[in-house]
Image 1 (cartoon, one colour):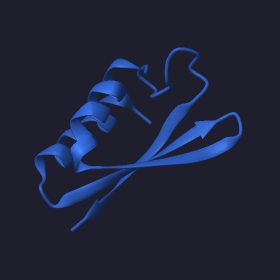
Image 2 (image 1 turned 120 degrees about the vertical axis):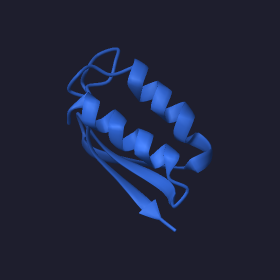
Image 3 (image 1 turned 45 degrees about the horizontal axis):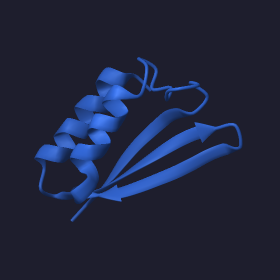
Image 4 (image 1 turned 180 degrees about the vertical axis):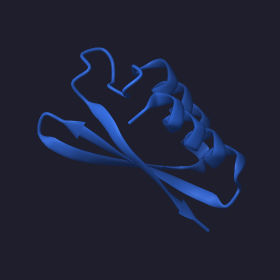
Length: 75
């Protein structure tokens, strides 16, 4: 996943009051993991992924885990 697109989708979710949850699919050494969080965490998680991933959404510090999908739930 491209970081620029990921952050843009996240920004649109933060601005939209209809989006209540975000789910991320993250590839790990053991296979895919899913992380879901509600609106109360949107800003915090946006900053986390913005500051802790490279341009291909591989997560620091080891760049083993990679965000591959973002989805959201609408009211």
